Length: 360
Image (spheres, helix red, strand yellow):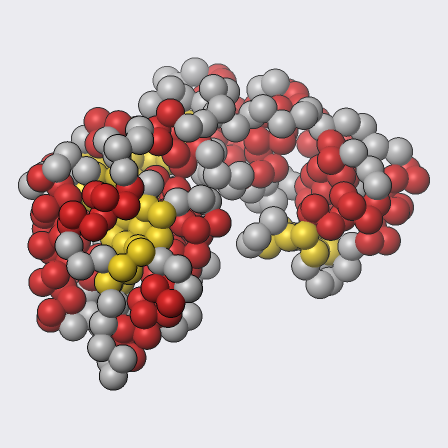
């Protein structure tokens, strides 16, 4: 049987309307998940709505048991084994499920992503790069998609690869990669944010991409069309202060437009594994993080009715940056965060990429 604290944390994480940022704020304010769950009704009422229905303890216990039966484990953000670089993200997943060689999380990691409909030449080059990086004890991270992702995992499998999937640990996607996914779960490391049984949906892939970028000191893109998921991963890596690298391609090939555009905008041009190693440098970036894994911000403060009215007046259906709300309201960041927390729990506020929020 799981301990009560673990069950409470998983219940809070699996509750609708509680995302990664909200989870961290609740733990920061109330100290533990059990106390946060008790406080939800009051917070939502102050936000003008009803609290979300908290996930049942039995549901959390079943999930814990199912992951264990799969040969995996849950890894919470306050666990010392949680990936250090990933913990630096504001929206780092509060919990991961994983199977395989957890020691790979201690290695320097590089993400490699690219087109699903990649050319044969790109796939061959991706395999070679991944193999050479793995031979140098670098963990190669990708998303188990068709094309470049598959080639990357195959190339690095014998030396160390991490596969991040959009669904649950027990769901193979795409289906033709089922055998590869199982090999990664045995010889490498398989990571999922979604609970077991969840089929991947379109909305899950950007969340997966942030984990791929967040685990890694840098991201290499090999063939990517404009507005592709690979470019989203590269953007997220850049926003997190990580290195962005790209393999150039022919200007006549639409699949090279994304990479060539990245290089034009300042990404490092990659022609060999040596270019990647030189770019990421010798610095051990695993140590660049706060010692308490992201719970160092000022604790939320109670807000007055007047402050809530001002904040709601500043919000609307168009997403706005939280920093702009702080500037225009003149309130302390802790007050602004408290009001957003109350509105979100009441179902009245939606969070968007880039630290922006809007009223629903």
